[in-house]
Amino acid sequence: MTKVSLAQYHPTGALAENLRQIESVMGRAGRAGSDIICFSHDFLGPADDEGAALEVIREGARRHRLEVLTGHLALGPQRPVQSALIDADGAVVDSVESGVAKVMNGSLGPTMVLIERQAYDPAIDSVARELRPKVMLMQTNAISLLELEAIKELAVKRSYNQAHLIICASDVGPCADELCLGTSLAVFQGEILVEADVSAAGTVDFSVDMSKFLDYDVLRDAVEIPELLRLKYHN
Image 1 (tube, rainbow, N blue to C red):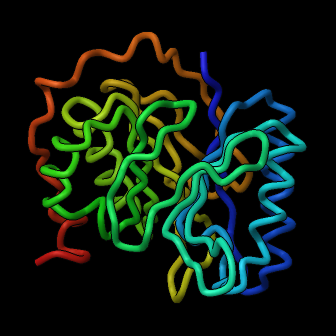
Image 2 (tube, helix red, strand yellow; image 1 turned 135 degrees about the vertical axis):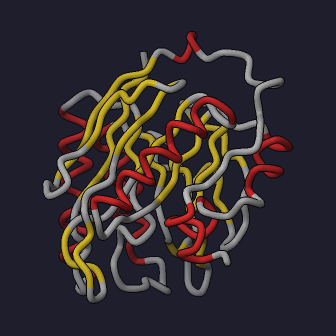
């Protein structure tokens, strides 16, 4: 079994406070015995163009023996990436450039990390068929219960057709001029394993048996994206 933690909290406008929150949820995941922790896209809050946050996250990975899937992060001065995979030794194993969809290979197997715009793009179907991920991490936020239900619907559909395990990692609390509901959840081959409290901050933990992954090579069909989500970015 592989144990996964989803970090759900409110990124503030202060990087130092967000790093404190990151250290806190990583410690919580470590004490829970998790193997990997996944973050939302805006987990750092304001842009960290100099890469100051990277060493904090690497040290947390080493201290708590955690693999980390990040959101937007700088790997150094003016080296922003959409996501990075950091192993339990604190090494940056792989990263995804902004706007790119690719597979990173970690403890969960081939994993695609999708920001919200990508997750709601019908064109991602063909990418999933080509790259054959076992896991999709959708970094999505919801500002209404209707949007939350649409995200859940999309996650279930994708878990039947595009990847065995669909994970959503979100912010919670004030975001821009709206209030983000916690949408962190995990769906394994159609079964919802865990859902976050829509107002709670902390970690959402679950375990998955990787040996039960089915052969999806012939099951990667197109998924109809709920209109509410698709129209958010794609007319």
